[in-house]
Length: 108
Image 1 (cartoon, rainbow, N blue to C red):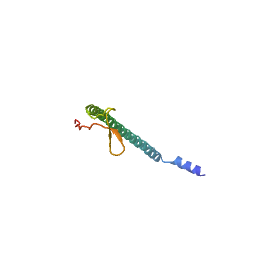
Image 2 (image 1 turned 90 degrees about the vertical axis):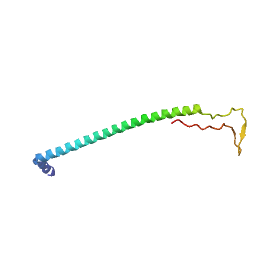
Image 3 (image 1 turned 120 degrees about the vertical axis):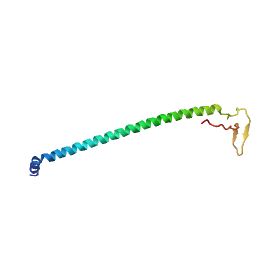
Image 4 (image 1 turned 30 degrees about the horizontal axis):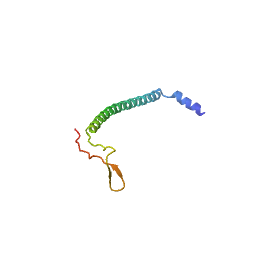
């Protein structure tokens, strides 16, 4: 019974209603597609920014490595040879003496 009544309603349905529902579904699909396109564009923008940051970080790391190498080459701190005298410090700790470090200014 109920099935027959629903079928009669569907058969008598106004075509304008069917068209309106179809247009609403179509509009919803268009909105979904546009929002996905917007999201993809944002992701591309973020990926571009991250790529630029990575290259900047790589440059900074190269400069840091060069500065460390330069600093190590200019460093005058050295450990005395093993045959050098052993110092006794306060407490029971025994260690080799190290020459005092000289302060060097880093180039800017």
